Image (cartoon, rainbow, N blue to C red; front, side, top):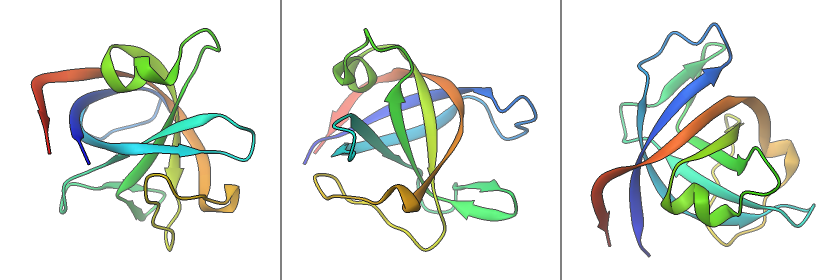
Length: 119
Protein backbone atom coordinates (compact mmCIF):
# COMPACT_ATOMS: atom_id res chain seq x y z
CA UNK A 1 0.00 0.00 0.00
CA UNK A 2 1.25 3.46 -0.87
CA UNK A 3 1.39 6.04 1.89
CA UNK A 4 1.46 9.74 1.05
CA UNK A 5 2.62 12.49 3.37
CA UNK A 6 0.67 15.73 3.67
CA UNK A 7 0.33 18.95 5.58
CA UNK A 8 -3.11 19.54 7.05
CA UNK A 9 -3.99 23.11 8.00
CA UNK A 10 -6.77 23.34 10.59
CA UNK A 11 -9.20 26.26 10.07
CA UNK A 12 -11.93 25.07 12.45
CA UNK A 13 -12.45 24.62 15.28
CA UNK A 14 -11.46 28.21 15.93
CA UNK A 15 -10.08 27.31 19.35
CA UNK A 16 -7.61 24.72 17.99
CA UNK A 17 -4.31 25.31 19.78
CA UNK A 18 -2.14 22.49 18.44
CA UNK A 19 0.69 22.77 15.97
CA UNK A 20 -0.58 23.98 12.61
CA UNK A 21 -0.12 22.72 9.96
CA UNK A 22 -0.09 19.08 11.03
CA UNK A 23 2.19 16.50 9.43
CA UNK A 24 0.05 13.49 8.49
CA UNK A 25 0.26 10.31 6.45
CA UNK A 26 -2.56 9.20 4.18
CA UNK A 27 -3.14 5.46 4.39
CA UNK A 28 -6.07 4.87 2.03
CA UNK A 29 -9.75 5.24 1.28
CA UNK A 30 -12.85 4.08 3.11
CA UNK A 31 -16.40 4.23 1.77
CA UNK A 32 -19.13 5.54 4.00
CA UNK A 33 -22.67 4.20 4.16
CA UNK A 34 -23.73 7.28 2.16
CA UNK A 35 -21.48 6.14 -0.73
CA UNK A 36 -18.93 8.93 -0.19
CA UNK A 37 -15.23 8.14 -0.08
CA UNK A 38 -13.21 9.29 2.94
CA UNK A 39 -9.42 9.60 3.08
CA UNK A 40 -7.90 8.05 6.20
CA UNK A 41 -4.93 9.88 7.66
CA UNK A 42 -2.77 9.03 10.65
CA UNK A 43 -0.22 10.72 12.84
CA UNK A 44 3.16 9.27 13.73
CA UNK A 45 3.10 7.48 17.05
CA UNK A 46 3.71 10.00 19.79
CA UNK A 47 2.41 12.93 17.73
CA UNK A 48 -1.33 12.28 17.98
CA UNK A 49 -3.75 15.11 18.74
CA UNK A 50 -5.45 15.62 22.06
CA UNK A 51 -9.08 16.56 21.55
CA UNK A 52 -11.39 16.99 24.55
CA UNK A 53 -8.76 15.28 26.70
CA UNK A 54 -8.61 12.20 24.47
CA UNK A 55 -5.81 11.04 22.18
CA UNK A 56 -6.77 11.00 18.49
CA UNK A 57 -4.34 9.25 16.12
CA UNK A 58 -6.58 8.93 13.05
CA UNK A 59 -8.75 11.37 11.12
CA UNK A 60 -11.05 10.92 8.12
CA UNK A 61 -11.13 13.63 5.47
CA UNK A 62 -13.95 14.31 3.05
CA UNK A 63 -13.93 17.01 0.35
CA UNK A 64 -15.83 20.00 1.75
CA UNK A 65 -17.23 20.97 -1.64
CA UNK A 66 -19.18 18.46 -3.71
CA UNK A 67 -17.40 19.40 -6.93
CA UNK A 68 -14.05 18.23 -5.50
CA UNK A 69 -13.31 14.55 -6.12
CA UNK A 70 -11.60 12.46 -3.42
CA UNK A 71 -8.53 12.38 -5.69
CA UNK A 72 -7.98 16.08 -4.89
CA UNK A 73 -7.75 15.21 -1.20
CA UNK A 74 -5.13 12.56 -1.93
CA UNK A 75 -3.04 14.32 -4.58
CA UNK A 76 -3.43 18.10 -4.50
CA UNK A 77 -4.70 20.97 -2.33
CA UNK A 78 -8.26 20.60 -1.15
CA UNK A 79 -10.54 22.06 1.51
CA UNK A 80 -11.82 19.21 3.67
CA UNK A 81 -14.26 18.34 6.41
CA UNK A 82 -12.35 16.67 9.24
CA UNK A 83 -13.86 13.76 11.14
CA UNK A 84 -12.05 12.46 14.20
CA UNK A 85 -11.89 8.73 14.85
CA UNK A 86 -13.21 8.22 18.37
CA UNK A 87 -11.23 6.48 21.13
CA UNK A 88 -11.62 2.72 20.99
CA UNK A 89 -12.03 2.69 17.21
CA UNK A 90 -9.24 1.95 14.75
CA UNK A 91 -10.01 2.21 11.04
CA UNK A 92 -8.31 0.40 8.18
CA UNK A 93 -8.38 1.31 4.46
CA UNK A 94 -10.90 -0.60 2.33
CA UNK A 95 -12.75 -1.76 5.45
CA UNK A 96 -16.29 -0.72 6.36
CA UNK A 97 -16.71 1.57 9.34
CA UNK A 98 -19.61 2.72 11.45
CA UNK A 99 -20.59 6.35 11.80
CA UNK A 100 -20.55 5.59 15.54
CA UNK A 101 -16.73 5.37 15.16
CA UNK A 102 -16.34 9.00 14.05
CA UNK A 103 -17.41 12.51 14.96
CA UNK A 104 -17.28 15.71 12.91
CA UNK A 105 -14.47 17.81 14.33
CA UNK A 106 -13.51 20.61 11.97
CA UNK A 107 -12.53 22.04 8.62
CA UNK A 108 -9.11 22.34 7.06
CA UNK A 109 -7.03 22.26 3.92
CA UNK A 110 -4.75 19.41 2.91
CA UNK A 111 -1.62 19.85 0.79
CA UNK A 112 0.89 17.32 -0.53
CA UNK A 113 4.03 17.47 1.60
CA UNK A 114 6.22 17.70 -1.48
CA UNK A 115 8.50 14.82 -0.57
CA UNK A 116 6.73 12.20 -2.65
CA UNK A 117 5.32 9.01 -1.25
CA UNK A 118 6.67 5.88 0.30
CA UNK A 119 5.58 2.26 0.00
